[in-house]
Image 1: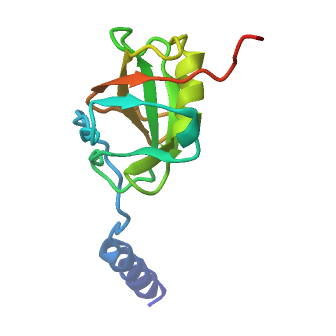
Image 2: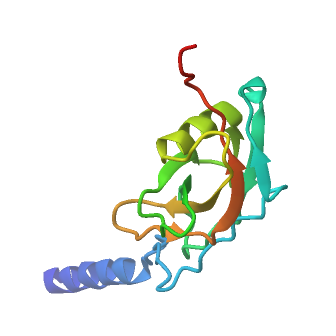
Length: 159
């Protein structure tokens, strides 16, 4: 009888463990995450002025990349001189919620001057968006968009 109770308890436990399923969702990263698309700005050429330094230059928008699972993605809009392959890319703005950012004229002008662009002279720059999840997932780089921009001087020679 004691053996029968032990066997019955053993089979009952086996049935309980066999009935349990692993309901946890597993995040599986796609092996090839497609680049997201940076939408074309409203203009291809911008002339920045000191009088407009507090205004919004542009709202840059892009599509969201599909990593294969729901992830908290951080977006960073970067700019560099055209043809430099983003070797000296500078972060213009970031977003952790929406796939868009507003760029201020004065802040963008300071970034362009920091890249070595000459004031009052048109120059070609390229923009892209870097989408990151964490250090273990490689970042995704969007398509690039080229614009011509003329920064304004912030320092003036003495008279």
